[in-house]
Length: 97
Image 1: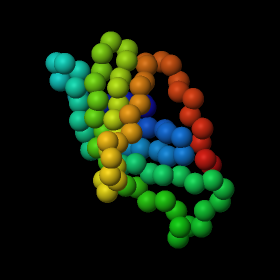
Image 2: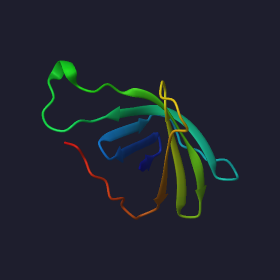
Image 3: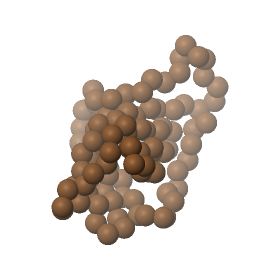
Image 4: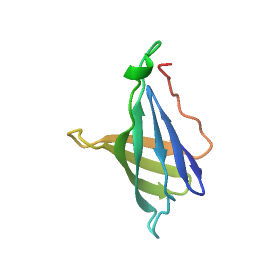
């Protein structure tokens, strides 16, 4: 996850995400923002079959250099996907491209 002044870009295994609003945690480090989640697939994809961005909610808590991140994708049942991130420690992301 790369946070900018205006939002964030995210890379997942076989997916990417985008947040187009400022990620501003409250005094306890809690945040909740809207964005998109775009699944990817292996190999070439026809233009008319390209994956579409799905609406998503990104929420979590930041404490010191650690972040707990939950991704809830609109239309998916269940508790969402949870990730643990640490500042300046790249994750082991395997892209499907």
